[in-house]
Image 1: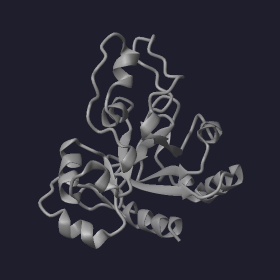
Image 2: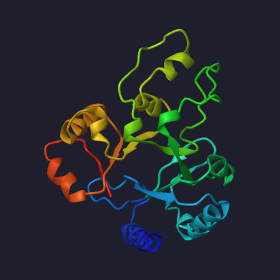
Image 3: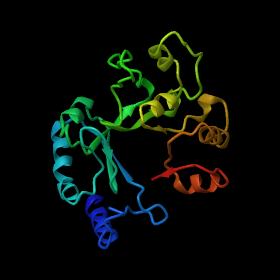
Length: 224
């Protein structure tokens, strides 16, 4: 329902691509912007992940999938992100030297006990080699800085806002859910605040309402 139409679209868009351009995505205005397909796993199952991996083979063979090659993340027209009831360890175990299914990391708990801050540069558990989004339900959002603890890099990271933690790991922050009442403010005010804070993605269900209310809010990304 999704993969076959996308492949036909990519075939059409890339039929006469010059070697210099290398590839074209679905967006006319920004031809080398990747399209992210977020897949929400509803059951905990290695079998489901294996089936997804199998279904992606034809896109993989045509080099349409963003992938990690062992040292760098190589952008392509389609980026696959697994969310929901999928295990992080299963993502790590799947094609570690050519990973093209990325994890939706937990934005509310990015600061992980396995992070390493003793190296020249921090080594994070969730990073661009294995994850793309870092997501949280909005009611669990910590968007502003807490009181910064400058005694160590680990303490600085732990006391950073969720958006800063995601940014330092190279991940795109994403909030879902509409618990505006938790913040004692209106929907429009919260949207403006999130945009000014440079959130990556804000998920919404009612696309018509989002388009109507978001006029004039530059920088808002609408994800269907």
